[in-house]
Image 1 (cartoon, rainbow, N blue to C red):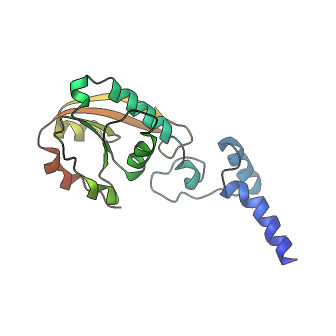
Image 2 (image 1 turned 45 degrees about the vertical axis):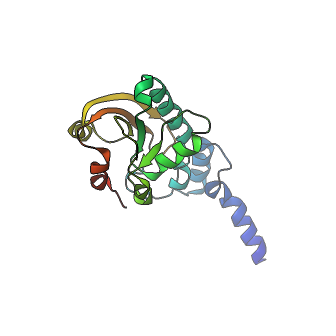
Length: 181
């Protein structure tokens, strides 16, 4: 009897725990069951559970960043890196770099920070997210280059910045960028 109860419960709850359905169907199914997950992280704004919404948008981010990178003049591409403000950005770009042309990827978040700063001379940094005022305080030229959109992602709208002419060497800024948490 207990085995039957466990199996039935597992079958009923599987679609809200494992990505079986589309995002829309998952939402609908969870609502019918009365299962509405609470946000697990500050800034979580999608109706999907975080463990699902964290899985969306990464290929699109890599495609958009690659398009921004490829539009740079060849001389700038040689001295360019990408900076992800969290390890998810950096990890996804590294993963999708097999399909999309991208410069070296760095992140200031958690242990990714330990793998930086970039060793080569950097004149151009493509930065994912952040605010214009901060980037303008660190670089001579800041351009909002694109937006990566993904409606089901935890970060559904990510601004991609091109920052040129660092006012100090990136290695000097690196300690200030550190973000653990």
